[in-house]
Image (tube, rainbow, N blue to C red; front, side, top):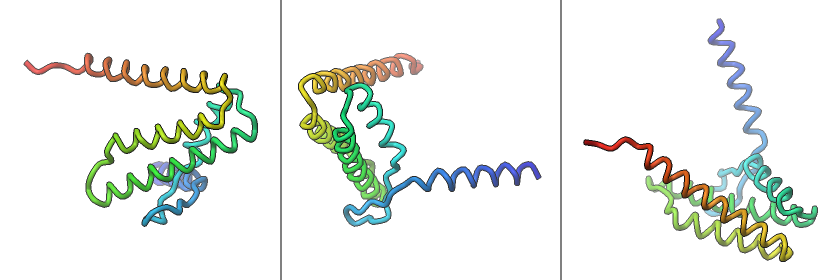
Length: 139
């Protein structure tokens, strides 16, 4: 009985989670979705860090959504082909997205944005280095 109850609660939670997704109308896969929940925290973080105006926030949100949809379509195409997405393609998309965001920013905001990107990049390198050193070596 408890198992059935737990399963029902989990199913309900999953159904509610999926209600905040918007359809993507890109490429050949018209059923792909980009979760607004995954975009909003990123944009809110930028709004706070960069002191974005409401107009800038709206424009940045649209840019993030556009590139999120492109990445989702790219991942779906790769999955259909039984392949993985080329990390260089994703990196190129992020670079283009960041250029579009920078075009909306003041000089002070650009500096903060660039510093944020550098910090994020440094954190990724540090995490990879830590993970590599923590991996046991074969003897």
